[in-house]
Amino acid sequence: MLPKTNKVALITKKGFSDSFSIVNNEIPKPKDNEVLIKIDYVGLNRCDLYFAAGYYLPFENYPNVSGFEASGTVIEFSNQELNNSNNLKVGDKVSVIYTCDHRKYGTFAEYAVFPINCIVKNNQLVSQKDISANWISFLTAYFSLVEFAQIKKGDYVIITAGSAGTSLAGIAIAKFFGAHTIVTSRNGNKKQQILDYGADYFVSLDNDDLVQKTLEITNGKGANIIFDSIGGPNAQKLFESSSQFGKIVFYGSMDHSGPTPLPIAIGLKNYLTIKVLNTNEYLYQPEFNKKAVEFLNTNFHHFKSIVGREFIGIDSLVDALKYLETGDLFGKVVVKVNQ
Image (cartoon, rainbow, N blue to C red; front, side, top):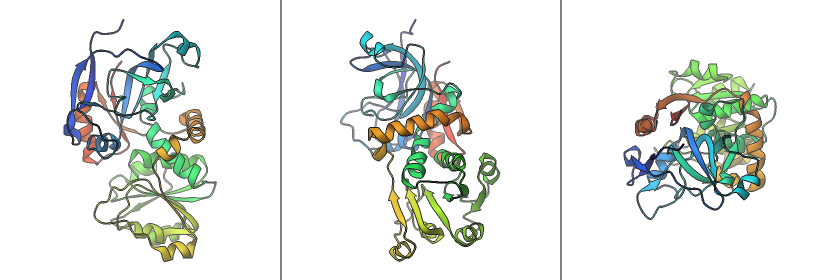
């Protein structure tokens, strides 16, 4: 028996965490190729805030739905034909992959409908809590390290912003492939947590010289792969830390203090390959999407949880977004929506 009301977090104005409001709506009825999902947990991401701020797809009207990833339970299919034509059934534990139009579909709700091609049946060895945080972070790390950089055993990988959820996912994937991880953070406050998660080496950017430390660790060769979400003027050090034939992935731009340099001379000297990665580049190509989702869903139980903090109840979602906005985190933030 479904409840009569459905709490939903809507974006009511342009902004960041202050733009979200919890309202009561009706439970939507699935149409066409849609599935009704009872949301168990939602994972929070910076893209939730950037979407509300208008950095991504512009919306024409307010309010707008919100939320990019979640775990949940299949409640209803739009029709029997859809039910019979796929490997899902009512009661299955699933994840929402963020390939749908976010002006129309959002995970921040107690119940929500999604196109069936956005739904993945979950690895049963992983909890709904943990898997709700995984997809955006691990897809970003997978496409960067596996598809682009072709990571292999013995590679040295620099991973910046080491306490962030996607950085932890990068550590997990790098270790899965037998690579060595050199993980940075601004200071040493989270050093032990990062090392406990699986980092091989830790570098404090406030106290250590990244280039010198990298050359020491790699016997003078430099890092084969660099996985960076910060950018900005200090990215010069990343170029100087790279090995010959190194590959550098910029997937974020957290440092707004100045432009990110592109030292052509270093790139030419060391035969560097540089990529600015938006996960959608791969995610909306079916062959890459299918390969990544199958690999990750098969192996999620081999990776440590990247959940850092849990909030309880959809009414706590705005507070969770405010906490996310502070930036002083270890791992991902999740909200438990339903029992």
